[in-house]
Length: 262
Image 1 (cartoon, rainbow, N blue to C red):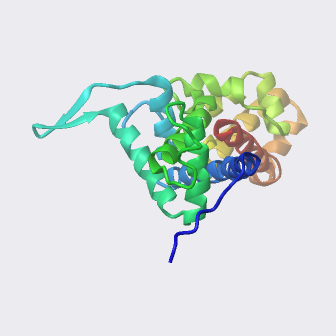
Image 2: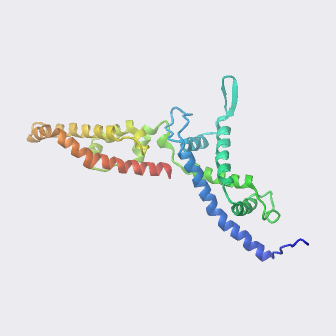
Image 3: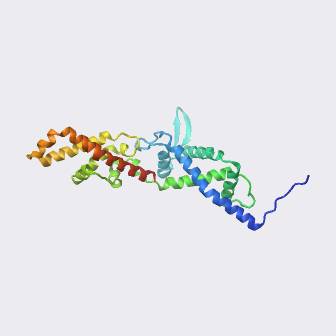
């Protein structure tokens, strides 16, 4: 039995390469998002005590932006390599695991794209082959591009001062306290809760309401409103919490997190 060779014209080859490119671009984005989601799902290691990293994705982005951190870490006399180097290896492992899940046709198309992007290779020579390292490198480039665009000041050591420039307040209580320069003073000590979607906002909300009640009492001093506020204090606090402050804080937090993760 003789071997059969498939003959492909130059135009057919170009169309095949174009199809590979059309497939590869959104697939690289999909793999990138899958890896980032994995990093977001894992708790922060706690490498930097003054950085409020919520998960491994925050930590990786901080290291990428502020690094490289090439100091060799030593524990119990054993060397564990540089911090930046270890994180590079960790990310590569995450990406490699995701790439290994791909079916063969996806690997072939992505490899064609990777060969094309690698100036040291001739993509025509390797059409139909699998270039795993090249695929992994392209995904890592995409991840690093996304990481470099993030605004990380809200998790940095100066986050208490930065939040005032990032937050857009809303609600009656916020408006009143902002006019007295109190809103930011209160919220600056609760940055952690404002960038954590699962954090309890009740302590922050109660503090804002208390500041509002104190301000109201100052304004109402020696008037019948002071007696009214004192008589219905608990009811007023409850209404302010449930109808104004907590909903406003939820909206503010959602906007902050979107800006931080964008």
